[in-house]
Image (cartoon, rainbow, N blue to C red; front, side):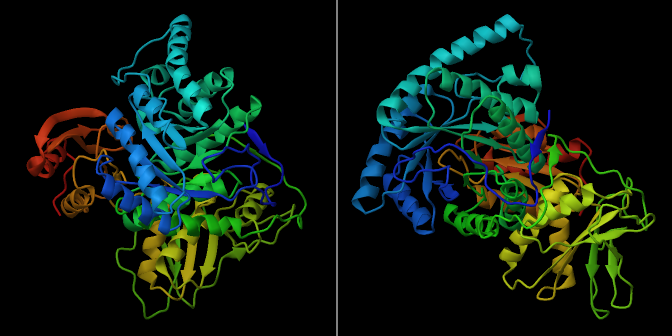
Length: 560
């Protein structure tokens, strides 16, 4: 299956339907909305109200609150009351996973309810089960009957719903037929959308979330293609789930969210960072502003692009260690007095005396056989111009994408670079990245380049931590625990380690990690090797050491 972008030179937002969420609607011609989620216990009214205020004061449009049980859902009324009395009118969203009764209570009290189709009705045992067509149809009838009461409540109270699909919590039914693939994620959403439409409910938002940026991007593109084919135009929420902490989470979010925003996809976003939720808002604003500040551009001839929904690297001929089957390289300019530590084999440092690579002039008849081409765009739709140039190349020459920045704020530099390089890396179109900024050292620029490649799932240069942003369900101090695990394992550059505060997405998200540390009870941790449990209910004060032992027993430990 593929879809067509009519003119990749021309930035324009996808035309979605409007969904009313309290007094702040999304979709249509409305601005891209920004949201975050509280990480306080929902029954702690004072703490949750205070954090809602902090998130809204930071600039969020919506605040999501976890509701694991009916009494948590019931307390949303008091939280909302206190916020309204304090002058805060922003919409509140209830986050529901396992219990339809919780959603039906919450839908009477808040402006939107998020349900996860993978665990809202289904019981997951993470078993590969076979379903005949008849059994599959019967399952859909059962789900329809369980979802219908929620739709009736939402119609009565004017409450919107987000169908929030997560890569880590697909149902056994979906897994048995599609696996944990973008196609499975898109179909998980479409199953619920068909039920919603059959019931005449259209105040719906969709999200496709994964800690893997490629999966997040491809599943969202695929969902939109399926919706368009069915005549549906629902708004889409974007986010890279369990993105991690600090600059790793910022860069991964900018790569995933930015790739889709560059195509005009996305009506609302959340940047999921391990830490205080209000810290997510400035990052989200910078990402959104990077795209919304550009104008619709008709200055170039229309250029169509067929897009598929899986990663395929462009085939190029190897030259000077670039292209072919070689890994994506980093090119760095530096003064002769500078040194770069830990330079990887094959990466290229250009001194002031080394001549530049060949640069490409836009043409249908380019013939640069045996060369390596450097592309840099100042076009209003930067990734679109680069894509068009690459599509029109006659020869399979290696391509380096370059960008020179003058940013002085490190976080802004990181976000803009990730949004620029990410779309071309996610689609496998370039063989090297060349990033310059005289306001930062060669070491800092080099590390940012490596981080962008890792966020794009193209090169691992350090241990990757798939850690959730924390919420009211979290069963341990996520930031402190992540710091402890990082201290002991940050030299294991070949590993991905998942750190999950609860079991909502934990077991499924472990499929994308080598090892996992998941909260399964107060003071209790369960350890995973990929998606398989290896040790259950370990006391929290012993769990980090036990994680190290598991890594050692499986032969993946390397002494620092």
